[in-house]
Length: 182
Image (cartoon, rainbow, N blue to C red; front, side, top):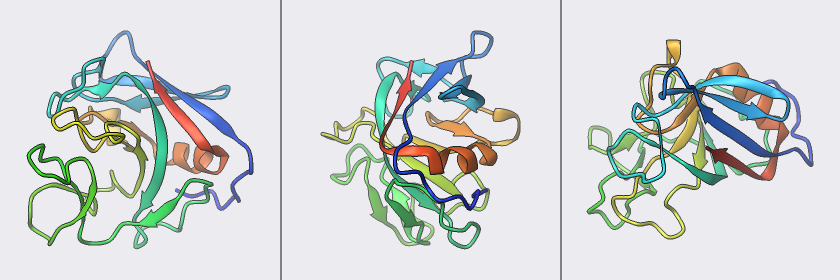
């Protein structure tokens, strides 16, 4: 997945995501002059995002950090903050929990959005700045940019691309890059 290239000091400051006219859970990620297919939430792009609605939020989202599976990939080259996913890492999607929409430590087997998965969807994740400054309970959690399933089947609200797209883009992203989902 990783290209091995060193990240550039300046780079892409904006990524744009558009829904397909033919299928609202499919779309296109535009990076400079490059266009890549992507999967979106089963509810399409939504202006009013709510927990569990399957929608991808219509918003300008900061790229917060990169999380990756150290046992499956080398550290991705990027200017964004990077952290290896630990076996107990999860994302709190319980709107009643004070840690809602945050990375948490959970023993294996407990509920929440587990980050170390058997499939490869979360081998590399970019945390998107949705509902985090401040966190509003019930407004949606765990909105990531991650790896797509074969056939670009819908996500639960995230943006998903093929691995080669991450390999190409991660080294080119500026530290202050924003994903504009329109």
